[in-house]
Length: 217
Ligand code: GRF
Image (cartoon, rainbow, N blue to C red; front, side, top):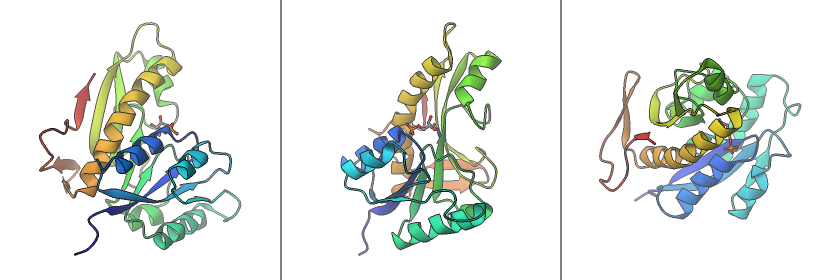
């Protein structure tokens, strides 16, 4: 019988707090996954040392080493394939992936975004929600497709936007929920509990003790 653990890679650009929540979930045995590689496009990403502290191999593939977006993505995909990655998690990875990458990891590539999609895609989602005057915001784990922050939704959590919030205060409230729902979504994917009907993500067979894919806080 093959290894039931899925081989998971994580792509980061910065502090890597979501990456840590995924690594902790895998280390605790809550996710049937084994972290095989962390890739950063920035050599100064704070998350790199955190990944090393979990004993996970890291690789920096910085801009400039490869000319053009697709050749950069080809270099990243080559590293992922060398590591045998079956599932790829974007965790604050600040690059838009080309169709080459997205197709290569079709339905095996997920992202976390700090808004309730389809509201406020793109950069500075928490600032967008504050400026818009939204009363509720949150976070979304979704499959990655060729459009930015657009693929089928796996999990969401909602938080209030309070009257005195600035973008930082809202971001901190949302981040707590990101760290709850991202490991759960990865656990569902690793355990093959997820299937798609069009855009709708159907999650079947999740243990009763395991909270749902919608959290309202
Ligand atoms: C998070 O807010 C995530 O939703 C967004 O980028 C941020 C990354 O934070 N995609 P961290 O590096 O995981 O701490």
